[in-house]
Image (cartoon, rainbow, N blue to C red; front, side):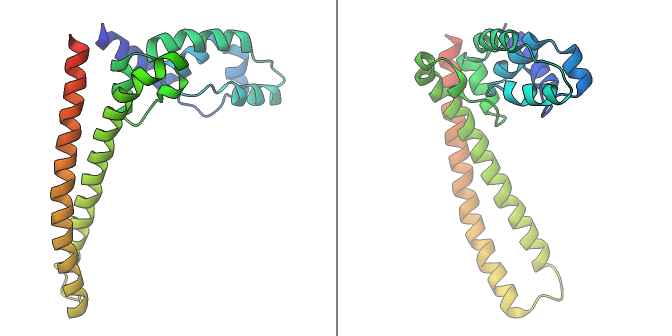
Length: 183
C-alpha cells in the first residue's frame, strides 16, 4: 500500500511540476486534480498563480474545486511515511498539514531532511576534495598555492570524516523512524 501511495505521489509530482498554466491548460484544467496533486506532494496551494495565469487568458479558475482537491490530497500526504519519503528528496513540508497533525509529522520530516542535508554535505566536500586534488596534480601550481591546497585537503579529510559520521547517524535515525512505522 505504501508503494502504491508513493507511486501516486510520484505521478502527482510529475504532473503538477509546472510553474503555472497555459491558456490551453486553463481551458481543460481538472481543478480538483490540480489541488489534489499540489497537496499530495506537500506543496503550498498554488491556486493564486493559477488564477492569475488563467485570468490573463480570460478563463476563470474553479477555486472551490481546487480547494476541495487540495484538502483531499492532504489525506495522502499527511502520513509519516510519505512526509519522510518526500523530505528525503527535499520536497514537501508538514506545514501544509492540519495543525493538529504537524507536531506528529515534524520528526519524520526532520529525519528525512537530515539524511538529505548530510548527504549533500558529504557530496559537496567530496567535490571540493576532487577539485583540489586535480589542482594539486597540475604542474603550473605555485609552491605557496600548493601548500595552501595541501592544508585545505587535510582539513577536508577531517571534515569529510565528520560529515560521513553525521550522515550515518542521520541514516540510523531514519531507520529507527521507519521501524516505528513498520510496527
